[in-house]
Amino acid sequence: MFSRGTAKFFKSAVGSASKRFSTESNAKASASNLLFKASVATAVGSGISLWYLNKNTAHADMQADGLHPPHYNFPHTTLLGTFDHASIRRGFQVFKEVCAACHSLDHVHWRNLIDVAFTEDEVKELAAEYEYEDGPNDQGEMFMRPGKPSDPFPKPYPNEEAARAANAGAFPPDLSLITKARHGGADYVYSLITGYCDPPAGVEIREGLNYNPYFPGGAIAMAQNIFDGVVEYEDGTPATASQIAKDVTTFLGWASEPELDDRKKLGVKAVLLFSTLTALSLWIKRNRFSSLKNRKIVFNPPSNWNTPTKK
Ligand code: HEC
Image 1 (cartoon, protein in one colour):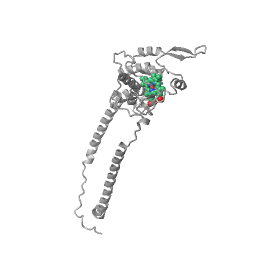
Image 2 (tube, helix red, strand yellow):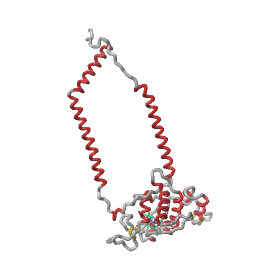
Image 3 (cartoon, protein in one colour):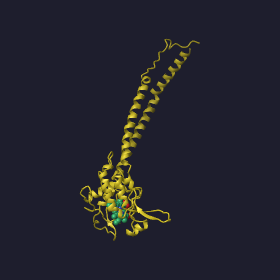
Image 4 (cartoon, helix red, strand yellow):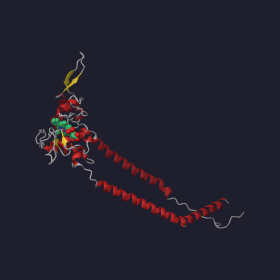
């Protein structure tokens, strides 16, 4: 009785469903299908138009925004590239001998350079070249002592006011995070310090400022300070202006992101590990589901399928 009743119920359900699908709702289905296609086409179309419009906006006001720097292939800015550590070492020398006269490097401590570009003994010697205020001693007085690896890189000026007073009112920013703080990063810093040129006809530069097309506004208080031979490298690398600029930019890139090498190494490990785990779990899922997915459910109608139920 039960099985017959259920069978009947199924039959009528299937019958009415197939009827519904086959007749008037066929038209409804094709209409909604059309609507779906039209909305996809509209979305794709408007996406392409927006991209095209965005690509072609004439927004670049070179004078106000600064010239966009070209892309340079610094090894550390490529996908899997790491820092050129010989370049960091030379760049530190440039920073110390040229830029440190005006710029601070607050977030870099001497010890950060150990095993990056210098050995521990070299760092101790470098730090000891500078005097730091310490104290108070037993008499309650502050005293000067040679630097230690735990000291920060020395500041050129005691405060912002002193820095401005020495630079015609302009403040030389701290360079610890400069490649992260400027649009274009390392490309910008390199272009800026090598990009000095004569102002184009009609552009007046105030006394004390210098023309640099990469600096927003075009007039920068910092004068050109990278020239051929401005430093002498201990490793014999020819000290051309572009080499010096590349090295100091690499050094500043390291100062901004000292964790970059480790981060990339960890990233590669994580991608390898997680893609293996994903592949493995997909395989296990297929394995586990294979018995379920291969199962065939067959309904064998009883012989009296079409006979009306006796009361
Ligand atoms: C004589 C002092 C002096 C020296 C030396 C110097 N700078 Fe500057 N620098 C300045 C001043 C002043 C400014 C601020 C400029 C401004 O705001 O117009 C500045 C600004 C900058 C900026 C920021 C520009 C911006 O987008 O705001 C960078 C980057 C920079 N200097 C890099 C360097 C590097 C690299 C060196 C060493 C090769 C160096 N500077 C050496 C004085 C100096």
